[in-house]
Length: 280
Image 1 (tube, rainbow, N blue to C red):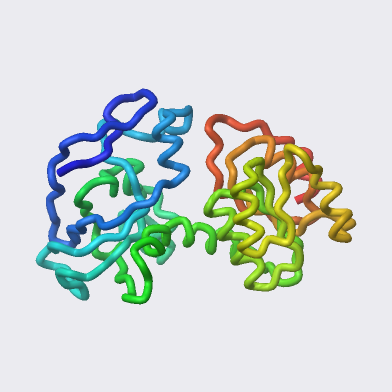
Image 2: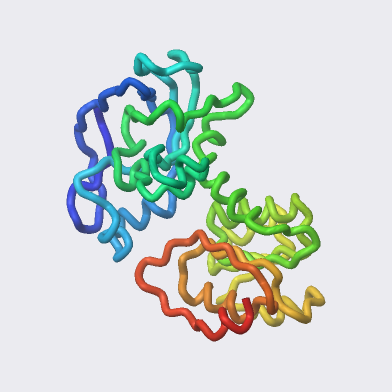
């Protein structure tokens, strides 16, 4: 089958002929219909410090997708050939203490589709049926292919109670923009999102952000005054992986504020721990 693979420990990605994956007793074989590009895929393409420490080579990459079941293992129940599906990309062991306690999202033995096991930028993908879910007919392939980042946005945004709170989101990529929409939907007061890309900031405005701030030309302190904020943000959602964005967030948090982090820094990041200890 044709696939996009990380063949070498260097920048780039390669179109390859890869073997069609084998189906285990509890697996689904999925014929890929559409995929989306994640920021993680960009890290892998650029081969930054994080990628070089994390990604094995050679490996098929990609983990945002929708497809159709074309085969399944003999132990699989609840699916049939022709089902349109996507899947949770974190494959867990089922045996560690967290898995046995139902906290599978904290499995210490997790492997990631397209991160350290074969991914979805290919004609076919195999995942455990436990990780797959059916897509309703009223959801398009385009939307289904971005359920993964949407899930990240929802999970991160709902880490804390947002009702009536002032929320700062650093990074107006797809996940940051979707998190802004979620925050407004559940009742946050002011939702401020920052970036340096005007196209993305305009999308954030359309998705309901109270203010979309280009930090190359505006100061957060001025925006806070404009909104009548006098004590800093209650909730921070760090979606960019940019060290300066995270440090700016720390500077503008209220005392007792809470931060959820999703962005992956490309390398080690210096943190002013005095800000963390004394404020949050």
